[in-house]
Image (cartoon, rainbow, N blue to C red):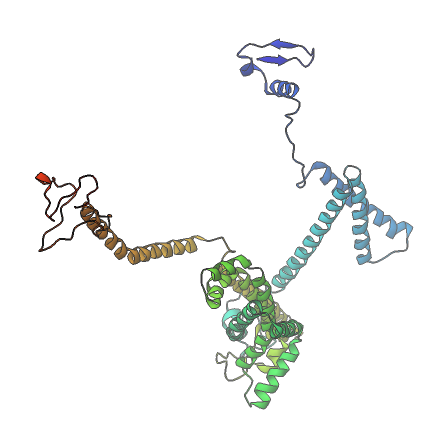
Length: 478
């Protein structure tokens, strides 16, 4: 083994055990010096947090804040909190781009700046959501600990009554009934319409898609007025939870159709082509391939529509009216929902009613969260990912299919094996082809006599049972 001395540049012989005692760094320098072409590839670092990046961010933030303080306090006649934060953020982005440009090229600078912008937008949205949820829960903390708030209605409670009297049970039940009616109408119609738009293209489907997209911007008061005019004025029905469910379904339907249509477009065309190539009709392909593949996205579409309909107030006020008593019959009598109850509670000047309003709003958000969790459980994971229950169900289906295929092919296999045994017994006949049939040169058996077998001893003096002489070479009878 030859080792190159990097300091003197002269090779020298190394003992056999030098590779075991030499340090790793010396071995690496020796291999690189002996073979300069075999340099290891070092991948470029395109992500992650580095010390210089963190210092650049904090330094740019401090510099931007100082520049903004100088502009608003000393150099320029600026004022206002919103202008202060906007100026500070723009100054931060500019200084951060300059600091990054001292070490990176233009493409890396743009990447770093856009990364900061996206993180800032995400943090702002998360902060806004946290503030809304936290503020609602904090203002409703006075009403939520009371058990009667969830079990009683407001029929025997007034604005001046304490929080230990009255509750929102009537509003909770009304919301559940209305949203159940709306989902029962919206889910089958919305998914069927989305499948139609996805599977049957044409002029009419383009027209329907245009109408659906236009209805997504339909004001909720218009939907309430339509149901009020048709169901209550023209048909003479009374205000009820059923009419409110119809109005909510009108608001939910375009949301569900549009979101489900987008999800169904993401299903790979190779899956449907493979199903149709196997001979499956279009309806079976949609039912067994398209819908299961897009199940998770369809659940999200239903949740989007539910979130839109469960928070509506004006359609419920026009079609269901308002009541302070508990009404579990959706076909008769007025019914109230949680959004409408929140509106009536909050507009009161009494602190106890305002606390009830914020408590009802917190319950409404919790209800939406529960419905979202239920939809995610029903929707399952994305295509190609199975949980333990789905994996067990697929394994059971595979075992059933294996048993069914074995039962279908077992009779044929038994007949085939029987035929093989017969062929093996009859293949020894002279001139036989191995299939149990006599060969073209085999003599026919007469009077119940059997033809001689190939392994039978040849008769003496050239005699044969069939008569005549037989050539032992060719087997032809003379």
